[in-house]
Image 1 (cartoon, rainbow, N blue to C red):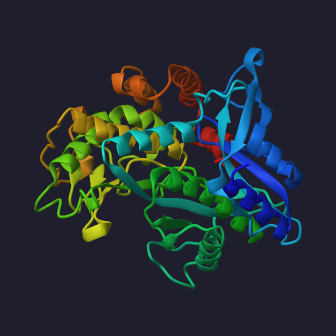
Image 2 (image 1 turned 120 degrees about the vertical axis):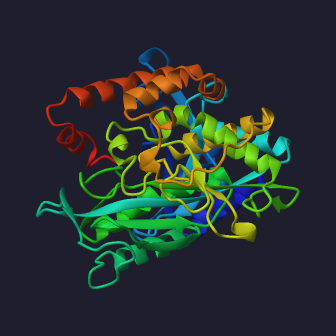
Image 3 (image 1 turned 180 degrees about the vertical axis):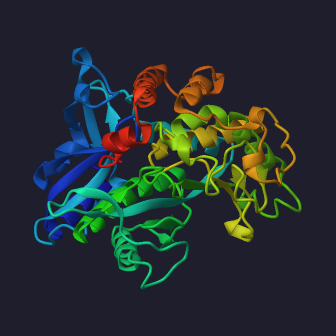
Length: 434
């Protein structure tokens, strides 16, 4: 037993931790977990905790069903919304086969490997996500209803903004869990909110997003509300995005610093790589049939382009300078698996460097006017087709992962397309799950 694990076990005992959640994601980005007694934690670190993978969508079948969860010691957090006596801790986990091999569907492991490959080239990526979500009312039984919590708009304050105290509680909860939220505010839609994170290593940033989803839903429930990360829960209102602020560092220097006046060749090629591969990445960044009702409206991008300040373009270079210089990838939505999207963006950037891609001219025009040949896929079906024919996607993600993902997402798209009222179908299928 390592000293780090010994320290964790001592912390658990001294802080009256009685239950430990071992958390992970299925291949679609839905968080799962199993609770163990704290007395079993040492065993979990040493030998893992087995579970029936055939019961997890996309993980396996009954003929090869056993997988093991190994808690990542660096991800310990206490759930502040649970009782302080006999409290609950959480770890994110690595998933392995019984013989110790990494499981192909473990996107955390895949992202960790991508970080290491980048570091071998002397490049350290940093990711600062911006996540939007809606707060809805609940009925007398506590069930969510499609009624926004307020009628406020962008940057509004009390009394229009009813979510101010909820966001405060969310940010304080995240801080208690060791995270670094930077900003929060009311967004454009009624009941729509946003929480932004300080940049961190991509794996930690993706973990933070999964923690945010859990904390937001828990705090909302404490306030008699329901939080939805559905990309377009209200048909004629602003959709919810998950913007990935990505920077790259080499020899202690942010490669995106002074990008507009004196662009670094590596940063230019990274951005070019993302632009090249984003049509194929879209099936993962925008994973629901209704994700495509968001794209192209309310500042969500429709085309493949970049700009300095134009928020209608896919990639924006914000005005921030120095260490905060970055590119902002604006197409993903919060229903995605953040581990997979971060992995694909990193690998796309590295492929741009490897191929010495040249960055096209900026698209300083309204993104809704993007010509058809330069648009993102406009349906989930079209996005799946782009991903399926992409050599890049097949090189980055394991075939076992892809086959499961494409089959399930194809079924979801066909069911959505066959529905008499696709919007109503999506609400009934996804609203209380995402």
